[in-house]
Length: 546
Image 1 (cartoon, rainbow, N blue to C red):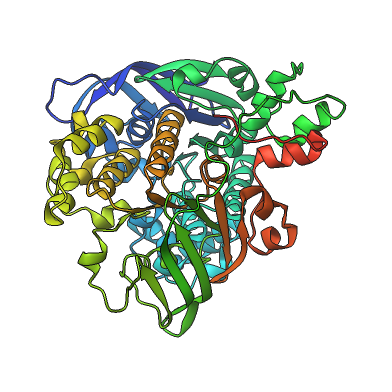
Image 2: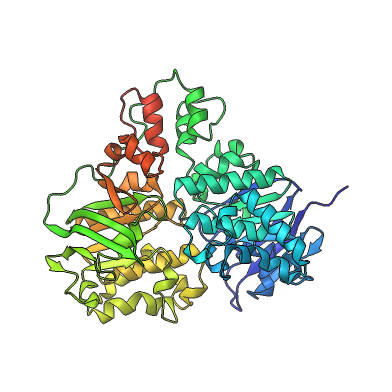
């Protein structure tokens, strides 16, 4: 009988020298050659730890305490160095940019092969071959650090695949990608899988991941809680494990469809003649935009990098208590725009007024009292040794420290167990929570969150949604930059749709998504709930569920 390609037996693991709970506990798993396996679960369930155990980073790099065995392609991951396992298990980590360190994409793809001692002619042939498979041949001469998020993700996938490993492990590859780039990565993974590579995918975005997988595992507290086909797993109650089924699945279950649909196309084909329950989805928490004072006013904002226009004549205003979502494809100018809101960038033409103050004349430190910003790549804003220091430093420097408020944030973001740890050694989701708490600690009038749901599970997203609603009720203004249109639909009163540095549409989410021309120009697709309404609602109002 052939040994499974991945064989895990009685695996226990915990980080460091602490006596804390096991991150992985008595885990047993077999994965056969040629499978496409989706692994999901709440934050802290052990998903990223499992990924790094598959190629020996755990325990060889991270140390910690480990029991049991992990065998991949016949090799024990504790008996063979990571450099040797590299040719057997390709891994793509959460932060794609952190894996890129060559001056060209071609160099990235060749690097691993060079380290393995491949002959130059074979390296050149393999680089061309894998670039064709992943469809990045046109990028080979580019600097990987100047690529879009989707292009960087495809580059890391190609680099991991270059040595022809039989296994590819990906930790949240869709995080921070726009819908078009998600589809590019999905297409590449399907092509790779069809060519015989075993794909192990960790992902929170089940709408994009479940339909491609043949098997689905749910991790909970370091153990496998559920296992089966995506249809079988999602037909059950996954909410108890911190998961939110795709909208199409929830609608299909509400309609008692015989087979659980994983996407809108399957749902509409099976339920075309069904009537949707009128109360299937509750209304958005704050239906109408507030009528408070104008907090921010951007007028004809134009900005360029090295002569390349990034923002072109942007006009945007924000009222106190409003929640605005900036949506658009990677590279549309969203992050550049929010860096104008607290003076990190100054417009080359036009002006930005924050509480009536022109950001071109105001100090960034003074603006920080009013505008709190959590970056997409939170490592860029961490500079303290512990989480405790990180979340306190801004509030203390701005003389807005409030112990009660800080303790409330620590409880809300579940930071108590992390307070004495280094923020740089946390998981991607934990880092996000620290950044949110730090941005909120000074209680700014305007809170700006760049990709707030990236790497976050559903319970956290629900808690964040409730917090944002509460902040709005108190008169605080919130700006979300996000590719998670479901979250944006649920939270934001208004969307501003960007493409090519311009605002193409500005209004309620339903109005923006109804603007087919603007959505297509921005390379975005409406949410599942909106598309279901259009296909089946027959005029009924359908919104995303809580």
